[in-house]
Amino acid sequence: MRSLTPPKIMLERGEGCRVWDVDGNEYLDFLAGIAVNSLGHAHPALVAAIADQAAKLVHVSNYFATPPQLELAERLKRITGAGDAGRVYFGNSGAEANEAAFKLARLNRGADGKKTRILALKQGFHGRTMGALALTGKPALQEDFLPMVPGVEHIDSTVDALEAAIDDTVAALFIEPIKGEAGVVDLPEGFLLAARRLTEEHGALLVLDEIQTGVGRTGNWFAFQGHGFVPDAVTVAKGIAGGFPIGALVTFGWASDLFSAGQHGSTFGGNPLGTRVANAVLEEIERADLVRGAIAKGERIRSTVTALGSPLVEEVRGSGLLIGIGLTRPVAAAVNAAALERGLIINAPNESSLRIAPPLIVSDAEIDAFAAILGQSLAAVAAQETAA
Ligand SMILES: *Cc1c(COP(=O)(O)O)cnc(C)c1O
Image (cartoon, rainbow, N blue to C red; front, side, top):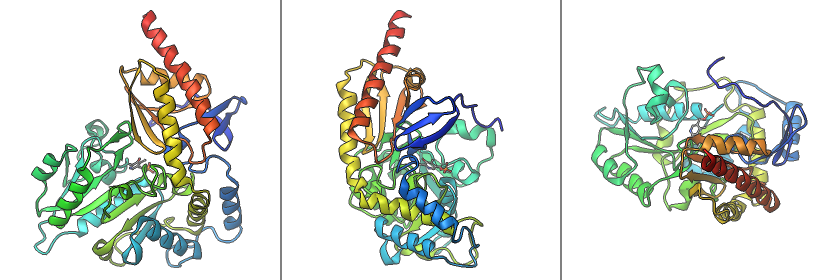
């Protein structure tokens, strides 16, 4: 379908943080399928989980529970901190997790039925299906598909804007704790805590889209855990099963009582294969202490990028192993292409930002190799600019 830009490279296999194309060229993968391949490529724990579960039970429908499904629900309740009052809904993607959260928001109508508004942030990204697209604060992505699902308002990421917009008619506030698709852009200091306070005051659900930031990537299991509060709901996908498609909505406290039987579902959602793979990935992340590791590795990336001293680098954003490099000029596509030519996979979410999101298993040696190639790529683009 012409909905995507045609790729120029065909990849055939991978191992750890490296992938090879069909012509045998090797690439260092510092994008990890956009924060998806938490354990890199062909990790033995993931391979074994897929093979073993495939030989047992792949799919059964939601008329039946399976051990991996219950185990994953319990694990998610534990690592999010939702605990015994938590509940988990399983879908197959980030967008589906957010669609479930959108329906959750519609169920929070308030005693007088007046809670009809949903707030989300400008430049926030929540997915491409119609509900998730309505939540996404990027008019350019929406304009060809109007009208949007009604009820969503996009506000600036400031406490003032939030205070001005929120009242008792708000059913939910959706926030991406770090705006990944916008170029890995951090929220202002104190914004999340203010969002928690104001949503609580007005009986609105605080829904955190941790689809990109979650599963250890930012140096906590979930980014909100670095801020000392709990939300009412969290959506999870990308890194949770290392590339196997699965998404989840986790609810906390009173939000766990909103859905009732028959109101939502998905044929494939929560099947034994997907949930088994997610368990294997989360277990390995825990065993190898990769959540804590993301902090030190992220610091190493940050300091090596800063040490390059490139005049094209304006700032380094993000947290842990979700890193955005803000450029002084709109040359992100050129730097991205120069890196790819030199065997490094990163990404340019917009014209002046680079996104770095390697597998959580990335080694110090791989980080140094990355920095060397990035340095050459930045220098090549800077030289072209000077020549032009
Ligand atoms: C990727 C992403 C989504 C959408 O997930 P899909 O699996 O592509 O549907 C939603 N929100 C955030 C923050 C994302 O990064």
